[in-house]
Length: 244
Image 1: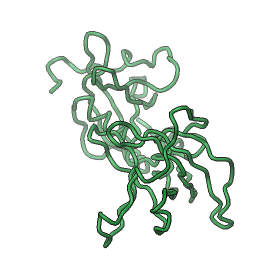
Image 2: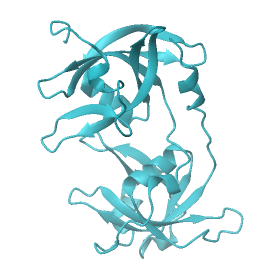
Image 3: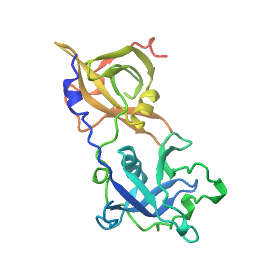
């Protein structure tokens, strides 16, 4: 198999960008859902464009790409030194943002997300992640050679392994795991490709994304529109007795 095509798509382009969050919207659990922010020119300290409302996922992706994101506080915290945001995990495993920890400063003296001006419910997102993030940093590349499906055709298990794209070979051996392992990898920023049987062996084809259902179930599906002969049911199948 070859990963030349996959490797060419993995070239990263990170730029050091600076943003300022002036308002924030929190959910009932105190997690950020949207922010009002603007990009700032680090040399002139002037806004690059008008402030826009974006979902917190845009901020997470910008931080993953190496951007620095500062915040504006309400009084009496306006006198505090500049403080930035960092990516943290929610209790449900999803990623969100929090104020970066300041070593040596007592927690009682620190501000919180609640000390940032509130973003009204009528403010709607104006931009998407592609407007601010060069590309999510890739931590690893995986290939799925076989899938296990339920009665509705949803992926429940995968046979997969990690790939060294520079050497064009597997890292270790393939393992069979529940699909939730794949979902976790995708949410962490990894890339996962499907392998399809061909006359030249198994070749990488389409890329996976994750799917969350309202009932809490999670699975994976292909990115983009359907492609004849390259759907999940076209992949090699795990035998019923092989799934953990």
